[in-house]
Image 1 (tube, one colour):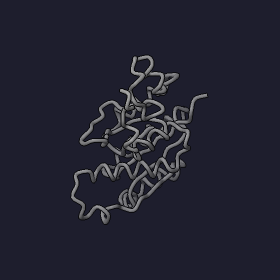
Image 2: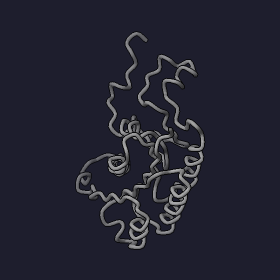
Image 3: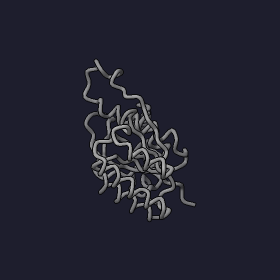
Length: 194
């Protein structure tokens, strides 16, 4: 039996048309049975900018998660990782309301339609996110450390600094995305015998 697939739409409401296009597409996917649920994770005050979006969410039984803006937390911190913190917090809040055994398709409110469509297309495969251990054996990489249980799908991942991964849309099992957000550095060490 295939696991449930939930879309996590994360971000600010910058452009009403972009948000509506993404939601319309995901609602069609849910109606067709390709995904089973949708969570919209944003900041407090964002939906008030476009009241029609909140009405669209509520009338279509889309779970809404509003997070208090973290500007007060990051106000004086000197880092260029602020955007990562914001994205990670919104994704974490979405994952908290998604079933723990589900596949999560993380997307944005804007600029992510092409990647989102490609990820949805992958779901037609019998095993869109294979076990990492199976892939390691198939590729002859048995000694390579495995951080995730299943592969995480991303088309243009970028690493700006160690352990900071970003992309407009990606897909993975909920438990693997939790590892991505809350990694333990010891999981990245190679065994001493290597």
